[in-house]
Image (tube, rainbow, N blue to C red; front, side, top):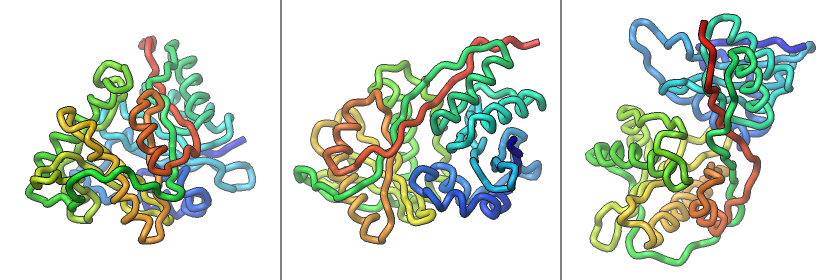
Length: 298
């Protein structure tokens, strides 16, 4: 038996689950980064679908965690490892309170179990949209040098960053052989990008003429871990080594602070997986994004 605790308060969530999250900060990086992210809400507060989850066993120990914080429809869940019965109970709890759930992302098998139960309850089908893989950097292997240099993104370039992050989402689907939009990526938040620029967490690679040709971002450190995202090079600038050099320089900088560095790849994108492996990133765990289709609505 498990107990599920929901809260819209990140501080309350971290107070309950912080030790659990810190025990494996690489695996838990997406949830911890989101829980530490500054947020502001209009007068009405967070939307109804916004919450953090702690799963406890009969002794009261935390045995799993998750969140539903995605701003874009269908607002998929993101689950960390938890017992199968917790994943099933979560699906049933959401269904019982009428919270439509058409996407489940995160750790296997929890995400798969939850998606399957949601599909059963709604008469739909659970389908894998993306197979992802989490990697952590071991010893950095410098790539072949490319002309240019890394530089922090200035606030004056936020419009270009928004344009590139928007393009990144569709391009990532196409590079993996999927229709654009399949991955249900969140649209870029201009204010969030400005915060990351102010915090020095977005960089351009400038070519020999000083023109931006690639973008690399990172999350703020949580529990000694930082995650690189996004990485984007416009199509007409690919094949020159810009991204490899930019990621290598950012990785070197982040490692120099004593933090562990990780990143996700789409398993269907052989180019990015090859690039990061060559730089010294090693796979940690496979995850998946599920969509629930064919739901029968009464």
